[in-house]
Image 1 (cartoon, helix red, strand yellow):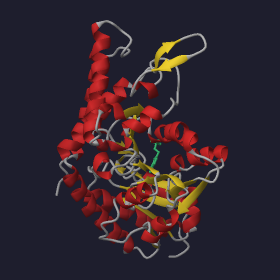
Image 2 (image 1 turned 45 degrees about the vertical axis):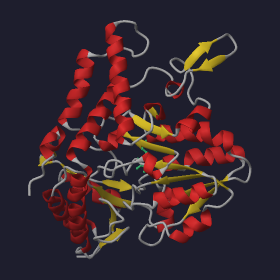
Image 3 (image 1 turned 180 degrees about the horizontal axis):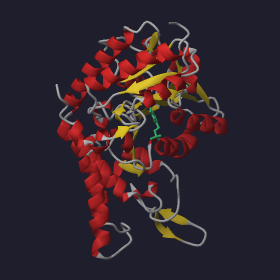
Image 4 (image 1 turned 90 degrees about the vertical axis):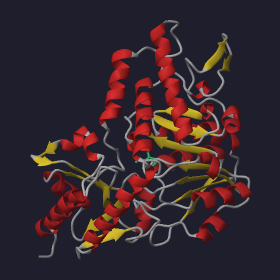
Length: 409
Ligand SMILES: Cc1ncc(COP(=O)(O)O)c(C=O)c1O
């Protein structure tokens, strides 16, 4: 069956090493549809000016484009108000903002920050730094053998000492979908605040911050069809209002005196300096694309391909698969594996020669690698434009790897 979305993505029609591109590194970043590229081009051709500052028409248009992107983003995740949407560069910046402006002021010695062992480094290191400064500790939730968070871990680790729970909706290594609603309920029952890292979730699954009752939620545009350099921090308005600014300078002020300053209301208080208007325009267009494609359709394509890829991989005796098994509803199309006797970097290089882009390494999740007792894995990650043919080409090439480099025959 032909894929209804593939032709919208110009880069997918490229060749690499004289072979058609097979792009299987979507958890790192997604490709961009023509509509997003055109929307950004249109912005730079017809609307570009510094927003907020100018009293001339072009600046007003740039401001309108930026604020419209904020409205579209707020609606997309069901935020109560666009004031709850802060544009950042990416997930990493959004998590740092929360660790500085929410974490540091509330944390005291002995407090606990609960997170899972499968978090991306960007959801570990900001908390390590905050914890060191304030005498708080990081308390890790460990996974079962398939990468799921067991219920007892939620019950045992989230306690009256917990002040912050910070958790990825979907693991960027194992593709596991974590029980965030259960964790939010438990965290709120002990008075803790919850941050959801939706970087790997929101490209594939709808987000409803009100239904989840999540306190903060962060994601990157570039993993969901938008350009790099635009990310989102959602925060409940009451929390954001009580937090001090993270970056300071132009645009985030109300009045500045020689020794003092007062700050602008939300969202500008957290958006110091000239913002990425072109990026926000691209993000808004990416959201329109996802809405039009429909999460149901995206999931259907990805589920079929994930099951197919898992089945094909499981038939290669030298391949070890990590994470949830075939047919599980608890996983998405992020698949980690290793080929016996072959370093993951070598596997990725051989596949590259066939025009196939996969990721190999620790995936910015070294604590998880140590927990799984593997130095690195290969990872393929799927998105709405991938096809069965992509998987077939990948599997054919993978079978060569063992023949060329493995210690078997
Ligand atoms: C789960 C998760 N969180 C955070 C990040 C960091 O995203 P960014 O590099 O866009 O800040 C990533 C990137 O791979 C991720 O997979």
